[in-house]
Length: 344
Ligand SMILES: [Zn+2]
Ligand SMILES: [Zn+2]
View 1: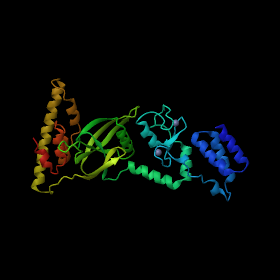
View 2: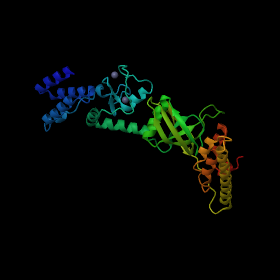
View 3: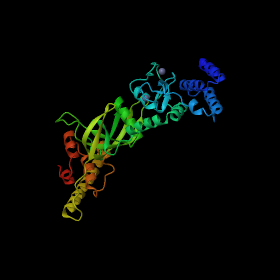
């Protein structure tokens, strides 16, 4: 660092402001929080402000020094590790999913990349000097976080139905990355199972909403999710190790209002609701006298939706049964609620 100060001093004295400026920027990359370097930069800006040659002085060359060594692109939201290396925040997080060493010098990092602060000064310098490239990097990052309405990141594990609640432990590096992106976006992902008849991911799956997300100190996530809408996968591709799919939503065929069909459907839903309520009463009673613990089922039975929405109610009800994955998969593609209610 002493050499940097000496060089800055010499170039400054010789009025070679451009060189002094670039050296200052380099120094700030090594130590973004150095007050002396920040003060020097401000003084230099003051001296050259208003000068006709200002534009020339303040346009640092777009060199590799502003590049992330992991993605080989302009640094975006840079973080500087204690060993003095700068990376895009997301790139460092991704690297730390595989180990806690600096990707450049292999120094063991005792930091939590998730909460580690962005180097504000370096970020400002990059943003100010390379505004177009920075904007490009920003939209590139946002396109990974905010997918279109018909695009869905996929967690390949099991067949999930609407209204189903479950807890997940996310430990695989590719899914940690996916969850970080989802949590910056709309908190939703698709859960898809493997179709036993084809051995590949099923065509039908369910969107789940992450209602709780607890990041653990070692980088894993504990999630609580609940099934929402069903969808059909039109095509899917790989995105940084996980699957992303273009989907179409499965819409129930609604019987026309005022017809016998809708009356029949609502009647069917009401009688199913009565049956469900009497089952819950009996299960609670059994749990109370300790005959049999139905804790999980009772938990699932909480928040019973009204029978006036037969589609939602039918899926809530079906979750009380212990269906096999192949049976659940079949239900995902049904478009007539009466078929669900007529299941044994
Ligand atoms: Zn990067
Ligand atoms: Zn390092």
